[in-house]
Image (spheres, rainbow over the protein chains, first blue to last red):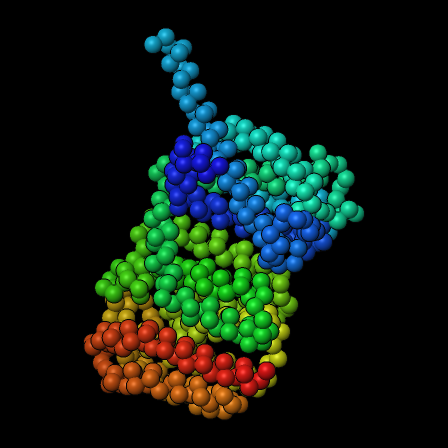
Length: 100
Length: 391
């Protein structure tokens, strides 16, 4: 995802400060969501062999915030990428129509 | 509470925020791109969620999920990508919209505005109070310390810089470690940044505590806003200005103690009182150097009202009082009374300063900022001694 971001200057490589704010806000919101789920007893941490085993809180493994950051990054690279493609297509179409 | 309820509530929150942000972002947000990204995310979620659940990374309490699954993922899990795609592109579009304030410059202003040299002054009282009570570092202590280290100071000084602009423009010492001179186009974004960084932390601290900690948090947040926000402007009400300022530093300790479930015996109350009196003195003395620019801007403070000389003398008396109170605290509390001495020595040469000469006290104020680190060191040693005696 970061490679795509870097190659096409979509998110962090377009406006690092705004991207940092979006990432921070998104991750904080999703962490609160997780915390609410954990407090309600919905999410249970699995004792998987591939997990780091590092726990940040009850039922909250180290992987969770990392995963949430990744979700935010995915969302933003997909959105900015899609917006780039759509605007490029929209710019090309009137040109083709005018026959120039 | 069941998973559909939790997911529904957070999804509604994200969608509401997204719509509000989208309205303000206007044409900067591309809805077709939101739809495309959303479709791709839902597909990715179906695949990777199923893989992670199959790998046994996490599971769900079976009686709390609605039932329908896509792949192995409960249908509620799809609220995450949908919420993300509804809110985040809108936020991004608003932050990067053409003609808007540059976020890079806002963050640089926020860095200066939050007074990094003073961060520790609010984080330390919280962390020390909580650690000395619970004797362990848990996630709540970490979250609270991060809050009182950065977002709290951003709110306190950021709001102050926004609404003090008329005075700060006239003050030659602004623009460095003692505060930013914030350009007007960054005023609104700064207030938003302060609100957005404070809200999640306050929410966590509120739900993690009881009625007492909630009251302490309410007091702390009220003091934060009331000091410089228009309408309240406690910083322009002599005496109330010093009381509010001191609350800024004592209330984090109060929150830490309440969250940790401390027993408020007479020794603890005296320590808090001494700290509060020390804070009163610090604020009053700090106001002396600004008498002339404040008067010019029509801003009142304890020092503009009672004058430079009397304010300095009041500060001296308050520092003596703070030291005297510490003498009444059980051992090793009286050791901390020594901390008052360097402040008295620093301030004493200005006991006769005139209003016209009041800007001279800035030299002592600069020494005061350094002294705080030295005092912090002495207080920490006293606390370690207390820890080893009482454990």
